[in-house]
Image (tube, rainbow, N blue to C red; front, side):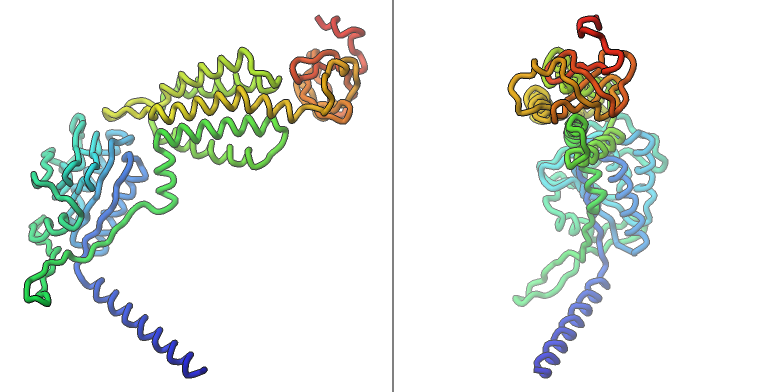
Length: 412
C-alpha cells in the first residue's frame, strides 16, 4: 500500500514538474495581450483599458490588442480625450481590432482608432458616428481601418502584427517550424486574454440603460410592497439591493432630471391608493407619470439613443401596472383584514393603537390588525384606546376614546 501511495505521489510530482516546465517554456515566448472591450464605453471600461496598457508595458508584452465591440461612450469628451492620450503615449504597441463579425464601434469610442498604432476590423463589422474630433495631445485623426479584406479572427490579427515596425520595434508574433510532412507551419505567438473581473463586469452590466431601468423599477416597487406589509423581510432586502444597483446606473448614464422626478412621483401616487387597498384616481395618475418618465429617462449622448427597447419598456410599465392594479391592493386587503365577512358592524367598535397615528398607522380591533387614520389634527399615541367612526376601503377612521365626537358625523 505504501509503495502504491509513493508511486502515485512521485507520479504527481513528475506531472507537476512537467506542467511547470511547460509553463515556464511558454512564458519565455514573446506574448501579445488581448483586452476585451464590450458594451458602452464607461468609466469601468476606460479604467480597464488604462490598466491593460500599464500591465502590458510593465510585463514586457510585445503588443496590446483591444478587441472592441461598443455602440458608444457615456464618458465626457474630456475623459475620452485623456484615454486617447494614454493610448497614443503607451510604451507598448497598441492595436485595435473591431470584432468578431457583427461588432460595432460607434461614437467617441471610435476615435480610439486615431490613437492606436494598428487598426483592423472583422468582416461584417461597422464603424461610424465618430462626432467632432477631440482635443487630444499627440493624436492625429486618421481613421484608417487596416486591410480592406478584413481580419476575420483574432489569430489573423496576431499574424498581421508580425514584422510591423512600431516606434523602432519590430514585432515578432509568428513562429515557424517544420511539420511532420516537411512543410513549414506558422503558429501565432502565445496570447494572453483579459476581460473585466466578476465585480467590475457586474457593475458594467448594471450601468446599461435597460438593466438600470428594470432595477430601478423593481427596487422601488418592492420597497413600497415591504412598507405596506408592515415589516422588513426578503422583499425589502431585494428591493434595497435593486435600488442601489439602479442608483449606480443612474449615476453613470446621462439622465433627464424631470423624467426621474416623474418616476418618483408615480411611486408616491401609487402609494396613496395602495394604503386604502383600492386602485382609484391616483393609480391612473401614477401610471401616466411612470410611462412618461420611462420614455424620457435617458438622454441621447454621443449620437446614440439610450432609450430602452420597446420590449423592456413593455415589461417595466406592464409589470408595474399589474402590480399596483391587481397585486398590491390584494396584498394590502389580505394583510389588513379579518376572516369576518362585512365590516360595517365595526363602526363604533373600540380598539388599541399599535403605533402612533399621525395621522396614519395601525390599530388592533377584535384581534385583527387594520390600517387606520385619525380624523383629528392631534396625533393618537401608541397604546391609546380608539373608537372606529367610519371605514374607507380597508382603512379605518378612528378617534380617541377621550374627547371623541359624540357622533362621527360631527367631524365634518
